[in-house]
Length: 189
Image 1 (cartoon, rainbow, N blue to C red):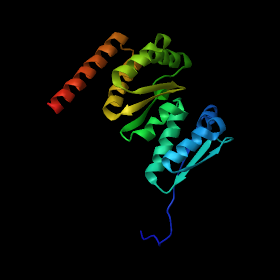
Image 2: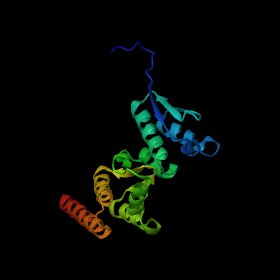
Image 3: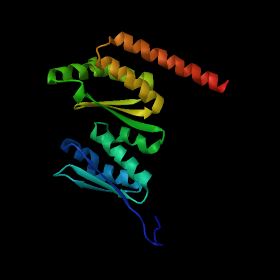
Image 4: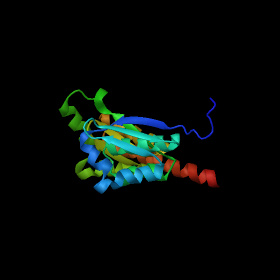
């Protein structure tokens, strides 16, 4: 496709977000939205009534990154945690939808409770052992981290969803952590 000189192509993507996350996306005095726009060189338009967010820009990668950050905020991450997606290009967002796994609200609460754990300890332990960030929000569990760590965290979460005992899941994570450390040692020596 030939583009005439002086013509700039814009990339635009739309994303629907939850009404209770619009304020978080915009931030105090528009600070969060402005930060995303500045870091990704995009413009963000928020339709609060419809819950639609339009992201536009000349750089397709910037648009994709902004959409990913907005999706992370929409899935319950704080802006600070979601901003890590802009700071490190090796991080990705993975979303596990519990809609197809649970049929009742009681099952949903049980699964969410297993993943979060008492006083948030289970979630915290998964984060610590995998080097990821987790958000349990609505009918989704979201993970931010490098590909291999996200894969390991997802496997642990899927085990918890299936009802595998916590001790077994944490043993699995411990084994994966030792394997990753050994791979790193082997790689460098």
